[in-house]
Length: 498
Image (cartoon, rainbow, N blue to C red; front, side, top):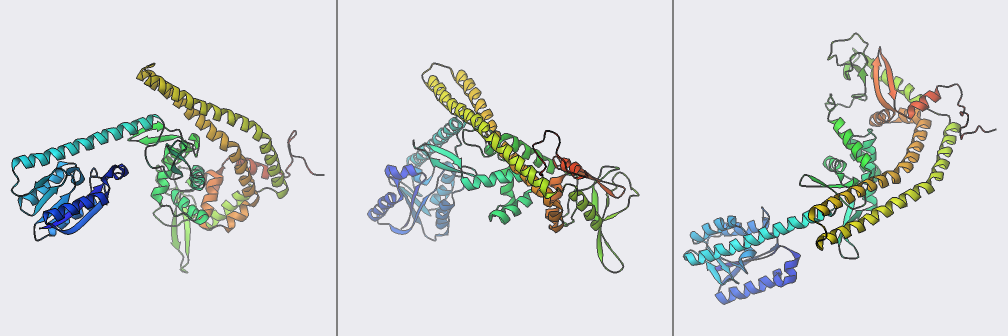
């Protein structure tokens, strides 16, 4: 009879325990030689028998099915072959048909067509013990995971932006990757500005960083609270002890923006109209929709008009070119003279430098408190192990300390970024304000839409005229730009040059 050898390990620990695949093969080959069995094939793999789908194990089954002659399946022990009774049903069918013998070397057991009830019971008992072992492993894994989660540790692979490593004590840790964590922070900043859709973020990542990220992955990153200090496991939220990449406030803002996108009352339909979804009717509040019209000359024009969901209006339809002209005038309203923009930039820069020392002091204080709490948590756990406190007292104190750590992490995230972000944002605003008309007029349609979304909170059409609600602080620049002269107020840090 020809034989098929199966050798398997499911964990690295089994390799160190002497159950490695080469060792199993050596034993199985020697057994086949003693029994006078011709080895037809060998299957070796590291595949857990706990998994619902065992791809490589299925290959063994397919070989048995395809064989036109009876086969002997040689395996070192029952738990190397199976750990549940569902495999027994299939293997037992082959056995009853006389197509398969199963040789369990360690148990000194051969299951074949004429096996008696005692031999079959030994097989069932071996499967039962293997199944019990699996369940015990599963319970131990669950307990380990629950312990890790309660201790603020993530029990799995770190999400994008982080990496897994072992610290000096050989304990598993997670930390931000220098480059990828910055990518995550950028994605949240872009989306939180309400100026970029997930699709636009994909293109921006590709254009600026050469990163190909699917829309699904962008969505996964933008809704994962791990970056702000929380981890979700089996639908439950646990605070973690790792360094955060973004603040809790920014995470909440992004979730709010995501929820808002899902509530849009209009659909784009896939057509590339420049101002679709940007305008609303001043009379009824409904969206302005684009529509193509063809002139007798054959030339096509795009017109925008109210959807008329609340009844038709007599308002004039606006051509896209006219809207672009009016939008250009709005963008020009925030333009600043170069001299004023440079002075404002310098003032912001000096102000920023003066705050650094104060922020560093507060930041160090919060970091020290966060580190001290780790010591308190360790002592609290020691008290539990020594029976000085009850489980409820331990859990209550631990939750109190973890809540405080979460609060500190949120403050650290805000403190670390708030002042720098303000300076960088203000600098960007001044650059945009200085070159806004030039940038707008030379941009592609998608860029024009993004600029308008940055500048405008809302924009309605009243009697063929755009009435914009300009976002702060651009609204202040727009008011200032309308003055005949730019003069500093009394007490201002700005001084006119002689």
